[in-house]
Image (tube, rainbow, N blue to C red):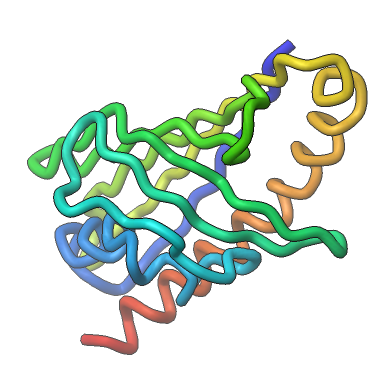
Length: 151
């Protein structure tokens, strides 16, 4: 069964600036709490583009490959699918929406965990779901600080 969640944050910066920061693949480790490196980045961010990032958490390191499903700069929507960079078919769909909020912006990040193998369905999805509920707000706060400090 998929596990879904979402988190929101406000940023004292215009939505286009926030969207530019969210979609700047090479700078993701600057604000993602457990991402350590961008291993591969796409030449152009368009549907079908892929990138690989390195993570470290719970004493483990792994690479995650993402594939862009949708990018709509006018609506400030960014959606992609990520999974470990191996043969495991499990994946997470991430959906970002950046909207005006007074003089700043509101970020909404939603995720949908899709475990496909026995161990991911039985154990890992529950652990990962709990982790995301604490990791994502920390990363969103770091993103907000980065965008606000670069103004």
